[in-house]
Amino acid sequence: MKIALICGKCGKVHTDDDEGYSLIIDFRQQQISFICQNKNCKFDNIFSFIDWQKKSNSSPLPKMRIL
Image (cartoon, rainbow, N blue to C red; front, top):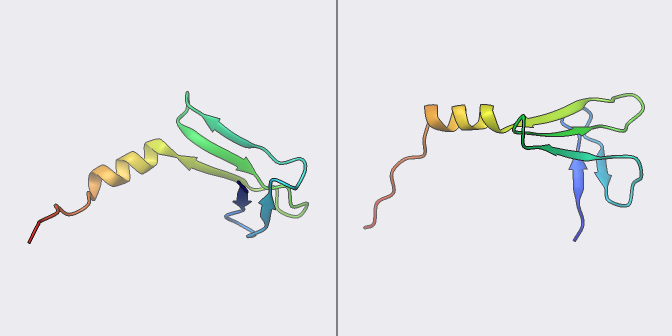
């Protein structure tokens, strides 16, 4: 299995062949974090499950119907 992390700011693709990158899954703060290793970027890519849950509750998927 190959894992690729793509920076949300600069778009650089980091693969598991690269050295020095880390993916942090924080269950306490309910977020996933990845810091871009591009020398000109260093952007902290954060995906927050709390924000995602709030958005999904405010605009839920439509109800499914069987025809």
